[in-house]
Length: 121
Image 1 (cartoon, rainbow, N blue to C red):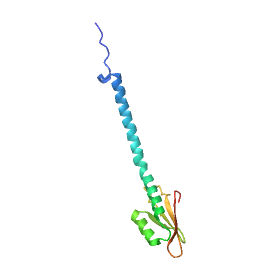
Image 2 (image 1 turned 30 degrees about the vertical axis):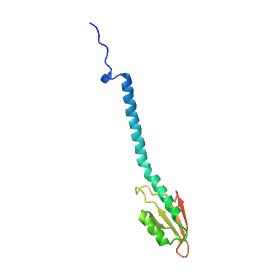
Image 3 (image 1 turned 60 degrees about the horizontal axis):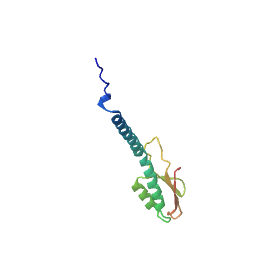
Image 4 (image 1 turned 90 degrees about the horizontal axis):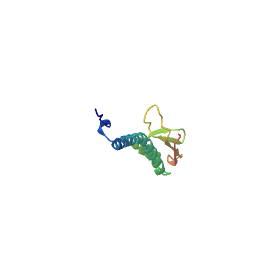
């Protein structure tokens, strides 16, 4: 009795299985990269927005105006002693406080003297 040759799995040739495997693994890699991007882009964007905001603050701007602009953008305004304020990006979770922010020095006339961005406030 003649034996029949073994059938390939799922009736696919080796080249077809290899092609499907490449498509599946490639799709999984793209999904992982997209997940990492979705997870880290908000941190990058918040830091970049804060840098732009600090750069836009001009010396001589009234402190009340700077505070209202910061509040409109959702930044936390924290008094940091005599003649200085901190503007911080609100934390994404309460357990991880934000270290990015803008240190404002205020002159005796109630106007900004300087605004510097820092990643380690």
